[in-house]
Image (cartoon, rainbow, N blue to C red):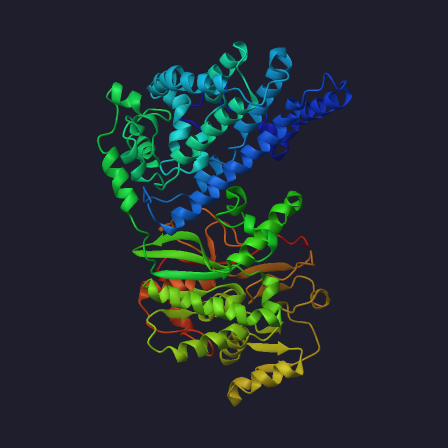
Length: 624
């Protein structure tokens, strides 16, 4: 929102929320009906092209978003070092409003201007005329309109909304108040209407011009430089006819320079070109990606989780992962993405963060949760984890933390064996079990004297049970095998606090993978379900309180955080991921994987000292 919003700031369909697309429904329905009911001689197939063209534009913009986020996470050719936060993501989530507006105006123009009916596919003269009018009147008028929008009256009421984003993303290009978009549409309509009234319009001239605007808008607002210098060497005048991302980035950091739309020639003519434009361009082209200090290795969860990644849909990534009905409509794209991950078969960068003086990255293995339970996939997964460790070693990474099922028992044994075979490795592998244990122990309500341990006995579960028994808290297990495994690890004094029982009187349950719905139904009313697993249990009780999986609220000085980690809320990270950061910032030169366990008290104290706070209770008690 602008600092002092003016009239026509809000979009007319804002109140519709996610149902805003219904404003196009009458036009789509009517155009389809008209085409089907018209006689064969009167049918105009062009009317059926408008809606698919809008969908293509949305897909095109999304591809730019994903590319930009991936490249800025890698760091190559990055322009501005500052990060993006949730506030910017929320402000820019309505980037598709301008496509809806364009669609409405296209339909309106078609019905109001019969001359647009039966437009030919191609006309060379119309394409040339469109290019000439854009280069002349459109670029000239935009330049002066843009300068006017930077006058304090218009800037505070309208254009400041766009400039709230210092670090730009492709979608930043279309984040303007409604009134500003009307002005831009009138401007860009000049070439289109000129070709219509001169009889030179064509489907290609319309489509190419709009796609040209989309490409240049998206490209110019990327936070990485992608225009190679050899283009300007081959054709030097091109520097006056095409801007670069670094050129326009200076407009967002300096504000009073580089006003041009896509062609900088008017900045040269009116002496508003930033003198550092060429220097920043060359510097950005030569910049190499930063080598991270800490890497968190995660993996995909479900086929739809690809959309929840930071390089997926920004609006989904910025909120806790949940099932969305409309993602079923995208199954063709989902299947295609699954094929890409299957063929690509290499770890990819998802996110880049900064914590104090540490550079952090999140890498994802292109495997889904279900594949971790397939025997024939384990060798491939282990190989990917080993390759990630070796890649981290080559990049000079200090700590690699294992997330989700990457640190489950089968893979832990493999990692431990791999590390023993490669004792010269400098990168330290951390599974984060110690901090997960610490978070669970400190989530148990004060005064609790007995807990029920339920679920698969993981490394974290065993460590929790041992710690509780040693401090005098009674741990009840319901299976004889679990009882024997735990008792074998306890000294005689602590073993007296481990009990085998068939009753369910305790109201504090520590639960992990393998907890069934039947198990939950046996718990007393008001039970606290505290997970120690990576994945949360399915909530089936409305009269019980479900805690979150071990996680911590991150301090404000952890920067460039604009996406949620799986199902966790904003600015909350899993304990396993936080553990890697702590090992990096503290400089602990030890591995924590396999049977190795770091000091629980030490890592808990360090987490609090560095500003992390436990995040435990989940307010949602509705069943999934």
